[in-house]
Image (cartoon, rainbow, N blue to C red; front, side, top):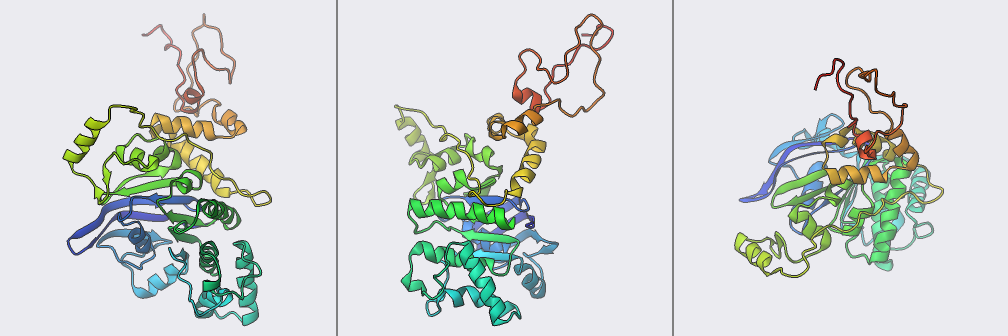
Length: 376
Protein backbone atom coordinates (compact mmCIF):
# COMPACT_ATOMS: atom_id res chain seq x y z
CA UNK A 1 0.00 0.00 0.00
CA UNK A 2 1.10 3.58 -0.59
CA UNK A 3 2.35 5.95 2.08
CA UNK A 4 0.46 8.86 3.63
CA UNK A 5 1.99 12.30 2.96
CA UNK A 6 1.31 14.90 5.67
CA UNK A 7 1.84 18.59 4.85
CA UNK A 8 1.83 21.07 7.74
CA UNK A 9 1.99 24.86 7.43
CA UNK A 10 3.92 24.88 4.16
CA UNK A 11 4.96 28.33 2.88
CA UNK A 12 7.05 29.18 -0.18
CA UNK A 13 8.13 32.46 -1.72
CA UNK A 14 10.54 33.59 -4.40
CA UNK A 15 11.93 36.94 -3.29
CA UNK A 16 8.98 39.18 -2.39
CA UNK A 17 6.49 36.99 -4.26
CA UNK A 18 4.64 34.58 -1.98
CA UNK A 19 3.63 31.51 -3.99
CA UNK A 20 1.43 30.05 -1.22
CA UNK A 21 1.39 30.21 2.55
CA UNK A 22 0.37 27.96 5.42
CA UNK A 23 -0.75 25.00 3.29
CA UNK A 24 -1.77 22.00 5.39
CA UNK A 25 -3.29 18.76 4.12
CA UNK A 26 -2.88 14.99 4.16
CA UNK A 27 -2.69 12.76 1.11
CA UNK A 28 -4.34 9.53 2.32
CA UNK A 29 -2.30 6.38 1.79
CA UNK A 30 -3.11 4.53 -1.41
CA UNK A 31 -5.70 7.05 -2.62
CA UNK A 32 -5.73 9.26 -5.72
CA UNK A 33 -5.77 13.01 -5.09
CA UNK A 34 -5.91 15.99 -7.45
CA UNK A 35 -4.63 19.52 -6.87
CA UNK A 36 -6.46 22.10 -8.99
CA UNK A 37 -5.82 25.78 -9.53
CA UNK A 38 -5.54 28.44 -12.23
CA UNK A 39 -2.28 28.79 -14.11
CA UNK A 40 0.44 30.40 -12.03
CA UNK A 41 -0.90 29.43 -8.60
CA UNK A 42 2.10 27.28 -7.68
CA UNK A 43 0.73 23.79 -8.27
CA UNK A 44 3.98 22.50 -9.75
CA UNK A 45 6.01 24.24 -7.03
CA UNK A 46 3.86 22.45 -4.46
CA UNK A 47 4.50 19.10 -6.12
CA UNK A 48 8.25 19.73 -6.24
CA UNK A 49 8.20 20.72 -2.56
CA UNK A 50 6.82 17.32 -1.61
CA UNK A 51 9.76 15.47 -3.14
CA UNK A 52 12.37 17.99 -1.98
CA UNK A 53 13.20 19.45 -5.40
CA UNK A 54 12.15 22.84 -4.00
CA UNK A 55 12.72 23.65 -0.33
CA UNK A 56 9.87 25.62 1.29
CA UNK A 57 10.46 28.59 3.57
CA UNK A 58 8.44 27.15 6.44
CA UNK A 59 6.48 24.03 7.28
CA UNK A 60 6.89 20.27 7.17
CA UNK A 61 6.33 17.48 4.65
CA UNK A 62 6.30 14.16 6.49
CA UNK A 63 6.94 11.08 4.34
CA UNK A 64 7.49 7.78 6.15
CA UNK A 65 8.88 9.60 9.18
CA UNK A 66 11.17 11.91 7.17
CA UNK A 67 10.57 15.65 6.81
CA UNK A 68 11.55 16.25 3.18
CA UNK A 69 11.31 20.02 3.73
CA UNK A 70 14.22 20.20 6.15
CA UNK A 71 16.01 16.84 6.33
CA UNK A 72 19.65 16.22 5.45
CA UNK A 73 20.60 15.20 1.92
CA UNK A 74 21.21 11.59 2.90
CA UNK A 75 17.71 11.29 4.37
CA UNK A 76 16.21 13.10 1.40
CA UNK A 77 17.90 10.65 -0.94
CA UNK A 78 16.25 7.77 0.91
CA UNK A 79 12.85 9.48 0.92
CA UNK A 80 13.01 10.16 -2.82
CA UNK A 81 13.24 6.43 -3.48
CA UNK A 82 9.63 6.24 -2.33
CA UNK A 83 8.55 8.63 -5.09
CA UNK A 84 7.98 8.29 -8.80
CA UNK A 85 7.53 11.54 -10.73
CA UNK A 86 5.78 11.96 -14.07
CA UNK A 87 7.02 15.32 -15.32
CA UNK A 88 4.83 17.71 -17.27
CA UNK A 89 6.62 17.29 -20.60
CA UNK A 90 7.75 13.68 -20.06
CA UNK A 91 11.37 14.83 -19.54
CA UNK A 92 12.69 12.06 -21.80
CA UNK A 93 16.23 12.03 -23.17
CA UNK A 94 15.91 12.66 -26.90
CA UNK A 95 19.07 10.71 -27.72
CA UNK A 96 17.88 7.53 -25.97
CA UNK A 97 15.21 5.13 -27.14
CA UNK A 98 12.22 4.42 -24.90
CA UNK A 99 13.79 1.32 -23.39
CA UNK A 100 16.93 3.17 -22.29
CA UNK A 101 14.90 6.15 -21.04
CA UNK A 102 12.78 3.93 -18.84
CA UNK A 103 15.76 1.83 -17.72
CA UNK A 104 17.75 4.93 -16.69
CA UNK A 105 16.65 5.01 -12.99
CA UNK A 106 17.34 1.30 -12.61
CA UNK A 107 20.87 1.66 -13.94
CA UNK A 108 21.52 4.70 -11.75
CA UNK A 109 20.01 3.52 -8.47
CA UNK A 110 20.06 -0.29 -8.43
CA UNK A 111 22.53 -3.12 -8.94
CA UNK A 112 20.20 -5.17 -11.16
CA UNK A 113 21.69 -7.11 -14.02
CA UNK A 114 20.79 -6.15 -17.59
CA UNK A 115 18.51 -9.16 -17.89
CA UNK A 116 16.67 -8.11 -14.71
CA UNK A 117 16.46 -4.53 -15.94
CA UNK A 118 15.01 -5.73 -19.23
CA UNK A 119 12.34 -7.72 -17.42
CA UNK A 120 11.29 -4.74 -15.27
CA UNK A 121 11.31 -2.25 -18.15
CA UNK A 122 9.22 -4.44 -20.44
CA UNK A 123 6.78 -5.13 -17.60
CA UNK A 124 6.26 -1.40 -16.95
CA UNK A 125 5.98 -0.63 -20.66
CA UNK A 126 3.25 -3.24 -21.00
CA UNK A 127 1.53 -1.80 -17.93
CA UNK A 128 1.19 1.61 -19.63
CA UNK A 129 0.32 0.24 -23.06
CA UNK A 130 3.71 0.62 -24.76
CA UNK A 131 4.53 -3.04 -25.41
CA UNK A 132 6.57 -3.41 -28.59
CA UNK A 133 7.60 0.26 -28.71
CA UNK A 134 10.90 0.03 -26.81
CA UNK A 135 13.08 0.69 -29.88
CA UNK A 136 11.47 4.02 -30.76
CA UNK A 137 12.90 7.43 -29.86
CA UNK A 138 10.92 10.26 -28.21
CA UNK A 139 10.89 12.23 -31.47
CA UNK A 140 9.23 9.34 -33.28
CA UNK A 141 6.17 8.98 -31.07
CA UNK A 142 3.08 11.01 -30.21
CA UNK A 143 2.68 13.27 -27.20
CA UNK A 144 0.42 10.73 -25.52
CA UNK A 145 3.02 7.99 -25.94
CA UNK A 146 5.70 10.26 -24.48
CA UNK A 147 3.45 10.85 -21.45
CA UNK A 148 3.02 7.11 -20.97
CA UNK A 149 6.77 6.53 -21.37
CA UNK A 150 7.36 9.14 -18.65
CA UNK A 151 4.86 7.33 -16.46
CA UNK A 152 6.56 3.97 -17.08
CA UNK A 153 9.89 5.48 -16.02
CA UNK A 154 8.23 6.81 -12.87
CA UNK A 155 7.10 3.26 -12.06
CA UNK A 156 10.31 1.28 -12.55
CA UNK A 157 11.53 1.68 -8.96
CA UNK A 158 8.14 0.50 -7.63
CA UNK A 159 7.36 3.79 -5.85
CA UNK A 160 4.79 4.04 -3.10
CA UNK A 161 3.95 7.65 -4.04
CA UNK A 162 3.44 8.83 -7.63
CA UNK A 163 3.41 12.54 -8.50
CA UNK A 164 1.94 13.52 -11.88
CA UNK A 165 2.58 17.07 -13.06
CA UNK A 166 -0.20 18.02 -15.50
CA UNK A 167 -0.29 14.64 -17.27
CA UNK A 168 -2.99 15.98 -19.61
CA UNK A 169 -1.04 18.96 -20.97
CA UNK A 170 -0.80 18.86 -24.75
CA UNK A 171 -3.23 15.94 -25.05
CA UNK A 172 -6.56 15.94 -26.85
CA UNK A 173 -9.69 15.02 -24.83
CA UNK A 174 -9.71 11.42 -26.06
CA UNK A 175 -6.08 10.77 -25.04
CA UNK A 176 -6.74 12.52 -21.75
CA UNK A 177 -9.63 10.12 -21.12
CA UNK A 178 -7.38 7.12 -21.86
CA UNK A 179 -4.71 8.50 -19.52
CA UNK A 180 -7.29 9.04 -16.78
CA UNK A 181 -8.36 5.41 -17.03
CA UNK A 182 -4.73 4.31 -17.01
CA UNK A 183 -4.11 6.12 -13.72
CA UNK A 184 -7.13 4.45 -12.11
CA UNK A 185 -5.98 1.04 -13.39
CA UNK A 186 -2.47 1.64 -12.03
CA UNK A 187 -3.86 2.54 -8.63
CA UNK A 188 -5.84 -0.71 -8.67
CA UNK A 189 -2.72 -2.70 -9.58
CA UNK A 190 -0.11 -1.21 -7.27
CA UNK A 191 -2.20 0.60 -4.60
CA UNK A 192 0.16 3.60 -4.59
CA UNK A 193 -0.60 7.06 -3.26
CA UNK A 194 -1.09 9.30 -6.32
CA UNK A 195 -1.17 13.10 -6.55
CA UNK A 196 -2.15 14.67 -9.87
CA UNK A 197 -1.52 18.37 -10.43
CA UNK A 198 -3.81 19.66 -13.18
CA UNK A 199 -6.31 22.27 -14.30
CA UNK A 200 -8.30 19.78 -16.36
CA UNK A 201 -11.83 19.64 -14.98
CA UNK A 202 -12.70 16.30 -16.58
CA UNK A 203 -9.81 14.62 -14.75
CA UNK A 204 -10.88 16.30 -11.51
CA UNK A 205 -14.48 15.12 -11.90
CA UNK A 206 -13.74 11.50 -12.82
CA UNK A 207 -10.40 10.35 -11.40
CA UNK A 208 -9.63 11.36 -7.79
CA UNK A 209 -10.78 10.27 -4.38
CA UNK A 210 -9.81 13.69 -2.99
CA UNK A 211 -9.53 17.18 -4.50
CA UNK A 212 -7.83 20.39 -3.41
CA UNK A 213 -7.53 23.83 -4.95
CA UNK A 214 -4.90 26.57 -4.72
CA UNK A 215 -5.79 30.23 -5.32
CA UNK A 216 -4.32 33.59 -4.28
CA UNK A 217 -1.50 31.94 -2.38
CA UNK A 218 -3.79 29.81 -0.23
CA UNK A 219 -5.32 26.37 -0.16
CA UNK A 220 -9.02 27.02 -0.78
CA UNK A 221 -9.97 23.53 0.36
CA UNK A 222 -8.85 19.92 0.32
CA UNK A 223 -10.90 16.84 1.07
CA UNK A 224 -13.18 14.17 -0.39
CA UNK A 225 -14.05 14.85 -4.02
CA UNK A 226 -17.72 15.40 -3.21
CA UNK A 227 -16.89 18.41 -1.00
CA UNK A 228 -15.29 20.47 -3.76
CA UNK A 229 -17.56 19.21 -6.54
CA UNK A 230 -20.68 20.31 -4.62
CA UNK A 231 -19.21 23.51 -3.15
CA UNK A 232 -20.75 26.92 -3.82
CA UNK A 233 -17.45 28.73 -3.18
CA UNK A 234 -17.21 31.50 -5.87
CA UNK A 235 -13.68 30.54 -6.96
CA UNK A 236 -14.61 26.88 -7.30
CA UNK A 237 -17.86 27.44 -9.18
CA UNK A 238 -16.11 29.79 -11.62
CA UNK A 239 -13.18 27.44 -12.18
CA UNK A 240 -15.18 24.22 -12.49
CA UNK A 241 -17.64 25.85 -14.91
CA UNK A 242 -14.95 27.68 -16.88
CA UNK A 243 -16.70 31.04 -16.53
CA UNK A 244 -15.20 34.44 -17.19
CA UNK A 245 -17.17 36.14 -14.42
CA UNK A 246 -15.81 35.47 -10.95
CA UNK A 247 -12.78 36.11 -8.70
CA UNK A 248 -10.28 34.56 -11.14
CA UNK A 249 -8.94 36.99 -13.74
CA UNK A 250 -6.46 36.87 -16.58
CA UNK A 251 -3.67 37.67 -14.10
CA UNK A 252 -5.06 35.18 -11.56
CA UNK A 253 -7.19 37.55 -9.50
CA UNK A 254 -9.44 40.58 -10.01
CA UNK A 255 -9.86 43.69 -7.92
CA UNK A 256 -13.10 44.36 -6.06
CA UNK A 257 -14.22 47.08 -8.49
CA UNK A 258 -14.01 44.69 -11.43
CA UNK A 259 -15.88 42.00 -9.52
CA UNK A 260 -18.64 44.42 -8.53
CA UNK A 261 -18.99 45.62 -12.12
CA UNK A 262 -19.29 42.05 -13.39
CA UNK A 263 -21.88 41.13 -10.78
CA UNK A 264 -23.95 44.18 -11.71
CA UNK A 265 -23.81 43.26 -15.40
CA UNK A 266 -25.23 39.76 -14.85
CA UNK A 267 -28.95 40.30 -15.40
CA UNK A 268 -29.88 37.18 -17.32
CA UNK A 269 -29.44 33.56 -16.29
CA UNK A 270 -28.11 33.51 -12.76
CA UNK A 271 -27.57 29.79 -12.62
CA UNK A 272 -24.16 29.62 -11.05
CA UNK A 273 -24.20 26.05 -9.78
CA UNK A 274 -21.73 23.29 -10.47
CA UNK A 275 -22.10 20.64 -13.17
CA UNK A 276 -23.90 17.49 -12.17
CA UNK A 277 -21.73 15.16 -10.11
CA UNK A 278 -20.74 12.18 -12.23
CA UNK A 279 -19.47 8.81 -10.99
CA UNK A 280 -15.78 8.23 -10.39
CA UNK A 281 -13.96 5.99 -12.87
CA UNK A 282 -13.60 2.33 -11.93
CA UNK A 283 -10.82 -0.07 -12.98
CA UNK A 284 -11.02 -1.68 -16.41
CA UNK A 285 -12.63 -5.13 -16.49
CA UNK A 286 -10.10 -7.76 -15.43
CA UNK A 287 -8.18 -5.37 -13.18
CA UNK A 288 -8.03 -5.91 -9.41
CA UNK A 289 -10.46 -4.12 -7.14
CA UNK A 290 -9.25 -0.72 -5.95
CA UNK A 291 -8.53 -1.27 -2.27
CA UNK A 292 -8.46 2.51 -1.85
CA UNK A 293 -12.22 2.61 -2.37
CA UNK A 294 -12.89 0.53 0.75
CA UNK A 295 -10.44 2.53 2.86
CA UNK A 296 -11.81 5.83 1.60
CA UNK A 297 -15.42 4.82 2.22
CA UNK A 298 -14.63 3.91 5.81
CA UNK A 299 -12.65 7.12 6.34
CA UNK A 300 -15.25 9.42 4.76
CA UNK A 301 -18.18 7.88 6.64
CA UNK A 302 -16.37 8.57 9.91
CA UNK A 303 -16.12 12.26 9.04
CA UNK A 304 -19.49 12.49 7.28
CA UNK A 305 -21.19 14.51 10.02
CA UNK A 306 -18.52 17.24 9.68
CA UNK A 307 -19.08 17.78 5.94
CA UNK A 308 -21.49 20.22 4.24
CA UNK A 309 -24.97 18.84 3.57
CA UNK A 310 -24.60 18.69 -0.25
CA UNK A 311 -21.39 16.66 0.13
CA UNK A 312 -23.06 14.33 2.63
CA UNK A 313 -25.92 13.65 0.22
CA UNK A 314 -23.51 13.07 -2.68
CA UNK A 315 -21.42 10.63 -0.64
CA UNK A 316 -24.47 8.67 0.49
CA UNK A 317 -25.82 8.54 -3.07
CA UNK A 318 -22.46 7.26 -4.36
CA UNK A 319 -22.42 4.22 -2.07
CA UNK A 320 -23.23 0.84 -3.61
CA UNK A 321 -26.71 -0.39 -2.79
CA UNK A 322 -25.43 -3.03 -0.35
CA UNK A 323 -23.18 -0.47 1.36
CA UNK A 324 -26.04 2.01 1.62
CA UNK A 325 -28.18 -0.60 3.33
CA UNK A 326 -25.38 -1.44 5.76
CA UNK A 327 -24.56 2.20 6.41
CA UNK A 328 -28.23 3.07 6.85
CA UNK A 329 -28.60 0.54 9.67
CA UNK A 330 -28.87 1.69 13.28
CA UNK A 331 -26.16 4.22 14.06
CA UNK A 332 -23.55 3.29 16.61
CA UNK A 333 -25.02 4.46 19.93
CA UNK A 334 -23.18 7.08 21.91
CA UNK A 335 -25.29 6.25 25.00
CA UNK A 336 -27.46 3.30 26.11
CA UNK A 337 -30.65 3.27 24.03
CA UNK A 338 -33.73 4.63 25.77
CA UNK A 339 -36.72 2.37 26.27
CA UNK A 340 -40.05 3.55 24.83
CA UNK A 341 -42.92 4.61 27.06
CA UNK A 342 -45.03 1.61 28.15
CA UNK A 343 -47.98 2.88 26.11
CA UNK A 344 -45.88 3.37 22.97
CA UNK A 345 -45.61 0.52 20.46
CA UNK A 346 -42.14 -1.01 20.17
CA UNK A 347 -40.60 -0.21 16.78
CA UNK A 348 -39.06 -3.14 14.93
CA UNK A 349 -35.28 -3.00 14.72
CA UNK A 350 -34.07 -1.62 11.39
CA UNK A 351 -37.49 -0.07 10.56
CA UNK A 352 -37.45 3.60 9.54
CA UNK A 353 -39.23 6.07 11.82
CA UNK A 354 -41.89 8.21 10.13
CA UNK A 355 -40.28 11.01 8.13
CA UNK A 356 -36.79 9.60 8.65
CA UNK A 357 -34.49 9.78 5.62
CA UNK A 358 -31.47 7.70 4.65
CA UNK A 359 -29.22 10.62 5.56
CA UNK A 360 -30.87 10.77 9.01
CA UNK A 361 -30.13 7.11 9.64
CA UNK A 362 -26.56 7.25 8.31
CA UNK A 363 -25.73 10.31 10.39
CA UNK A 364 -27.39 8.90 13.51
CA UNK A 365 -30.14 11.53 13.55
CA UNK A 366 -32.71 9.11 15.08
CA UNK A 367 -35.56 10.69 16.96
CA UNK A 368 -35.54 9.51 20.54
CA UNK A 369 -38.49 8.69 22.76
CA UNK A 370 -39.23 11.01 25.63
CA UNK A 371 -37.31 10.32 28.83
CA UNK A 372 -39.02 7.98 31.26
CA UNK A 373 -41.13 9.93 33.69
CA UNK A 374 -42.88 12.09 31.09
CA UNK A 375 -40.22 14.84 30.93
CA UNK A 376 -40.45 17.38 28.12
